[in-house]
Length: 362
View 1 (cartoon, rainbow, N blue to C red):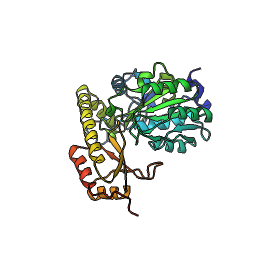
View 2 (view 1 turned 60 degrees about the horizontal axis):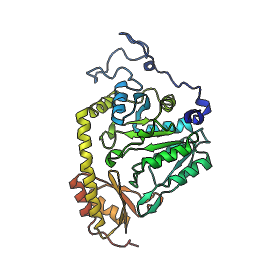
View 3 (view 1 turned 180 degrees about the horizontal axis):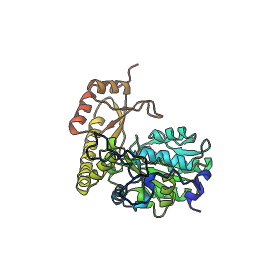
View 4 (view 1 turned 90 degrees about the vertical axis):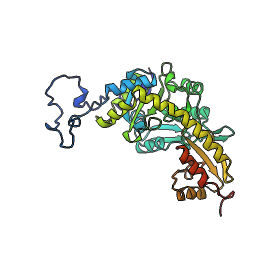
């Protein structure tokens, strides 16, 4: 049996999901099968919004497949990569009995989705060492096997740690967990890393799923377009768990325009500018008296420890700069996460932090 056949919830193995009117491959010029309005809304001048959209828009799947180097059958499109996380929990974690493995501090939606599905979260904390805050993949694999977890979430580059995982390490972990656990690799920030994707491992590993999004590098956060890349069997299982019409037409149109060759070329050219700005911002922060540590990052952000993180946060707010306060997360009681903005925005960050105290205020 494949990993998907082994791990898919038993009660979903013969579940076909909801078959919407647009799920059927029918042709005609009078459409009366979905109880839609016979007239367009007055504000819909182009009459594009009267009909329900395709559940999985063919043009978008094909464009994303080309972008990520996979086949269209290996792509499930959804509402950001957040929906992919949710669908994976739905499909592979029996309510009240499922388990997932994560490495905190990490993106909070893994644990949130687990909680909402009644699944247990098995924590294998990041290890703070000379190379940064790093995931212990061997320990995560041990935990997955010992606890019977069906999903193991990796974030590469890590959020908020910025760590880039090697494909060889991911492949070794997937090999070890084949038939026992699905390794989910969240690559929301991979474009900033200039590194190969774990999607290159899909041909040899039936237990890898990759999350990608257009929210970050492609600057479409408000459009909410993301996808899961995996083997067709896993994609089919997730599709059966998905809501009937996840993607509104305006968002799909925006994504298709953003994925035109000239738009993608411009986006990719901006990645080098982000990497250069990230290096300049990191160097500037390391030169400040109140900064204890700036972690290496392969994303478009920096995780920074301060002598007084509260004072740093307040100083930035006073200067009109909003950053992410990480102090409530495990191991990060003295840390902030700063997105790499424009050159002018980075200068404002550094200027606001120039007079920080070197010790925490009691």
